[in-house]
Length: 203
Image (cartoon, rainbow, N blue to C red):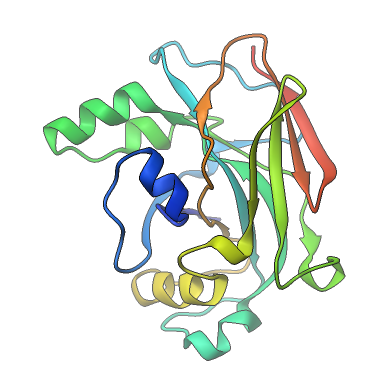
């Protein structure tokens, strides 16, 4: 099982971090050990002092494929959830400054909590999926799939050019604006179509 993450896929988020706008989907990967079971607490890692949340829609791949045509990409995913791409922003900044890869800032243990998947066909508005996160009871991120720079089909097709997608793989599809820090004692709540999906504490 692979965890594939798309970076810089919402214009407002690209601007808030003062990043360059990508010409095509850019992606990185997290190991399976990055998973955090729904509802389990997130242990704040001792190697960072600046952990940021990035709330994202997550696709579930339902059959294997490579070099998938964009026109056929929707046949390769069937369900969606919401997850968080936790990022050690202090380490990421150091890596960027040195021209190093970002794995230590993105791929650490428990950095990819996600909820239970729901069939896309059962959503109220599958053509424009709303999602978001509350931090300590206050909305900090709210997004819509319509605002993605690269849509689901483009993402699946592009990634499959380089990496064979397998049944059960998960693709984090990018975060909207509003990313920020978490601290020990915080409570996070994730929403899909404005309905509570799951929540957890930072310990």
